[in-house]
Amino acid sequence: MSILLDGLVQGLQLALLSVGVVFVYGLGGVLNLAHGQVAVSGGLVAALLMQNRLPPVLACVAGILFAGLVALLLDQTLLRQAYARRGEERLLLGIILTLGLSFALDGFFTWRYPNVALTLQLGSPYVRMGGLTVRTGSLAVAALALTAFLLLLGFLKTTFLGKAVRCIIQNEVGAWLCGVNVHRARTLTVVLSGLLAGVAAVAQGFFSYLGPEMGTEFTILALIVAVVGGVRSLTGTFLASLMLGLVNAALSYTVGTYITWIVLLAVAASTLLIRPEGLLAYWP
Amino acid sequence: MNGRRLLSHAVPVLGTGMALAVVPLFLGGSPYGLRITSLMLILAIYAVAFNLLFGHTRQLFLCVGALAGLGAYASVILVRDLRLSPFLATALATVGVGLVGGILSYVGVRRGLGVLFVGIITVAVSLIFHNLLLGLRQYTNGETGISTRGLGFGLGETPERAYYVLLAVLVLSLGGYQLLMRSRYGLAFRALEDDELNAELSGIDVTRYKVGTAILASALIGLTGALYADVNGFISPAVFALGHVDIPVLIALLLGGMGTTLGPVVGAVGFTLVDELVRPFGQLTVLTYGILLIVLFLIFREGMVPLGIQLFLKLGRALSGRVPREAEGAAEGSVGGSESTQRG
Image 1 (tube, chains in turn blue, yellow):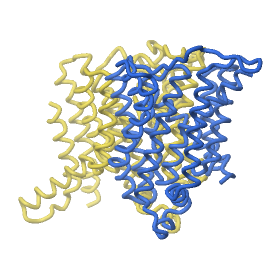
Image 2 (spheres, rainbow over the protein chains, first blue to last red):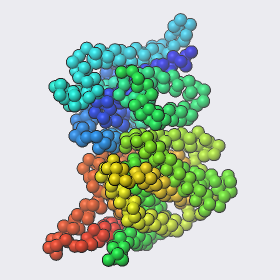
Image 3 (cartoon, helix red, strand yellow):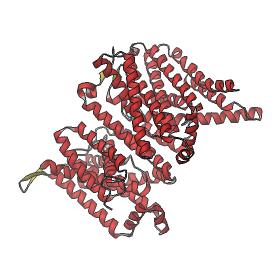
Image 4 (cartoon, chains in turn cyan, red):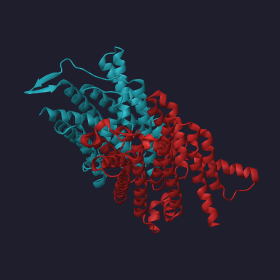
């Protein structure tokens, strides 16, 4: 039962991470392979600020904002180059440039801050809730993730910009014709994805710890979710995250990490072969 | 005329071979120098294969490391556990890896996957392979890896012989590449590069050419992986990781020039030089790889070889006032030459 709960909370964290990948791909056709590194940059900033005796809450907020800033820089420099192209060329430029960036950031983090890690501890490690012992960290992550999602949904459903974003995902040219400023909406989305990645990094700090070398793992997890959930579907992403979180927790517990990874990757690869639009992409 | 044209195609390959053949003389028998240059040759062969895959048929196989690792582990385990002769084991590994590459390519072409999806699937394959190596501890010894001493041709003990064996493989693969480009494959490649749909419509069997290319290139990668196991004396999951093989190969090919004969070689030389410069700084190498990849792809898409040819043509025009007839072949030869002076 506690494994199930752990899996669900992990799924929520995964969702935070993958929504960014899905959004950026859906909006601009660029698969951001440096997404995990953006998250790690935020987490590291939070950790460094905490080392300098800043209160944890402030440090985390600063870290999340920093991740957003990194995403903004990424958008203004590398992604802009990719957006200037069309079709296959854009896809190719997008993955190669972000792949390069992911290596550059990974190298920088492990070189400059090899021993910095973000861990967040709450007053008491466990609470009892209706007969179950629950980690307080998990509760915090769940609260964090759900708040972030409510804000995101509110933004998408109620504001004009949110509508514009959904509009571009459906049809870029159509959006232009309706007078939507696609460039601005894209930049905004990339920044949003960075902020969410920062939240995911902070969540990782609640779970166990976030180290400078974890960017690639984050990126791969987000990629698996995006592929299984469908790279254009938000609900699909959400469901896929929860599912993969559960599968990950259950398998890690029963058969070990290596087989878990193999299963997850195989699921992603076969999804691409069977239903390239995503297994769970039925929902809008 | 045909004989002369054949010669103009053979000159760059043989010239490169000869330039690289004298390199060990300058190293004065230093084992470290021989090791680095041997690894450089291996990188060049991978890049030749990757050039066929990505440069000519736009199949972004981000599993060069996994294919090489498959060849290496297969050949070593066949010798160790089934007591096959190293020749037979290497041959089997080469064929096996060729088939795996062919299947990957076939699936990709049949499902009509674009560059992006082939890239993601092959990355997934790489990571699955990596985790398999770690998980199948009883065969692969997990993270610790396997010492290949006494399980191969013994190239690891004779570094100079290893260098020349690798050089022979490189020159043969460059020669094979030239022949391939002069065959119907070369024509098909040119059509594929322009527009795949148009190529298909004008009667080119796209599936056959793409899958055939993938089989050839993967077999070459598998063979090189098996040789690497022997030369290096040791294999582990880490030496075949994505960041350890695929990224250097991609950088080397972009640096030298995609779709050219000597690009992979020039790129491998350039990459090795840069790598040696930043090696003392530890983790900074990863940072350098990343930045190189971005800069090369954004600003230097052409690569060094086409640039060299252009410069040579301009020079020739300035000197004689007309375009030299065999300029292209001669220019490629001169790039091979200048690259050896750069090293010496």
